[in-house]
Amino acid sequence: MMEKTDETISSREELAVYIEEAAVSVTNNYEEAPAVLMVDDAVIGTLGNFSASIGKAKSKKTFNVSAIAASALSGRTILRYRSMFPENKRKILYIDTEQGRHHCQQVLKRILRLAEMPDDTVPENLIMLSLRKFAPRVRLLIVEEAISTTPDLGLVIIDGIRDFLYDINSSSESTEVISKFMQWTDDKQIHTVLHQNKNDEHARGHIGTELNNKAETIMQIEVDKEDKTVSVVEAVHIRDREFEPFAFRINEEAMPEPVEFYLPKEKKTGRPTKGPFDPDKEIPKNVHRPALDAVFANGNISNYDDYIERLKEGYGLQGIKLGYNKAVKVATLLSDKQMVIKEGKDYAFNPEYHY
Image (cartoon, rainbow, N blue to C red; front, side, top):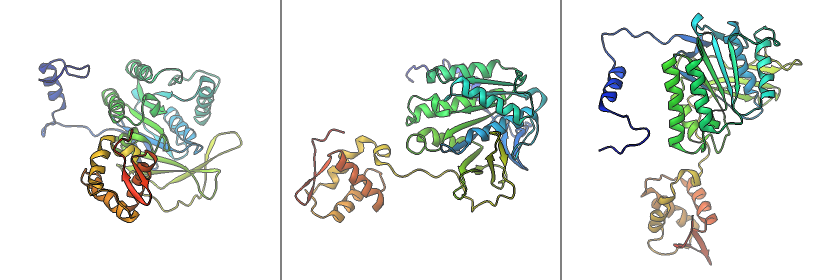
C-alpha cells in the first residue's frame, strides 16, 4: 500500500477524476493552443505553455523581458516581439525575486515607456511584485495566489526562477517547482516566461534541466563577442519555425533599441548543452567506494596511465561512463578528497576516507 504523504492523492475517486480529465479522445475536437507571443512570424509563446529565457550576468536579459512585457501591454511590436493576447487575457503579472522595490520600479517605468504609456500613472493591465524579502516557499504561495485571483490574466513573467528553490541542485525540488508553474499555466490558460541566469550554480543545476526539457521555447541572450554594447537574442530551442537571431543595445535614455542590419553569427542548434563535467556533482557519493574497490582489486597502481584506465573500468562497472578527460577529473577529485593517496610513486586506495 502506498505510504501516505502530503503529496499523496486522498482517494481512488479523486484519481478517477484526474484520469477522466487527462484522457484524450480520438473523436473530440481539441483546439490548438492560441499563439500569443511571436518574433517576426515565429511563435515563441502559446496559452497554456511556458517559455524560458536564459542569459549570463550583464547580458541585458531584464531589458529583453521588459520588451516582451511592453509588447504584451501595448499590442505593439517592440524590438522584434509581437503580441496577440485575447481581450480577456490582457493583464500581465511581472514577478521579480532578486531586486528591491526601487529597482523594480525602474523596470516598471521602462516597460511603460517602451509601451509608449505614461510612467507616472498606475497601469491598468500590469502588476509588478518584488518578492526579494520572502523565503522560497512563501514566494511560491504568493505567486499561486496572484495567478489564481488576477482576472483577465494572460502573461506571467518570472525574473529569477531559481529563487523559488532552497537548493538549485535538488532534482526533486526543481521538478516540483516547474510542475507547479506548468499546472498553473495550463489551468489558467496563460503564458509564462521563466527567466534564469545561465551560469547559476554550476551550469544551471537541475532547475535548468527542467526548463530545457519542458519549455516550448528557450531564448538565449548573450553579449556579442565583437561588440560588448550589443546583446543578441536567439532561440536555442523552439517548437515552431526558427527566427533569425536579432540584436539590441541600450541607448542614451537607458532603453533597449534594435541594432539594424545585424548580421547573425553561425547559430547553435538544439537545446542548451550541458555544462562541463563535474564529478563532485554528477557522481553519487555512494558510487565511489565500490568503484574504487574494483579499481584497486589487485593492489596499488604504479603507473598514471594504468590508473586512469582502471578508473574508467571501475566506474564503468557502476554505470558511470568515463572518457579520458572525465577520468582525469575524477582522479583530481579523488586526490582532493584524500580517497586516493600517493605512496611513493604508487596510487593507493585510502579506505578510511571521509567524503
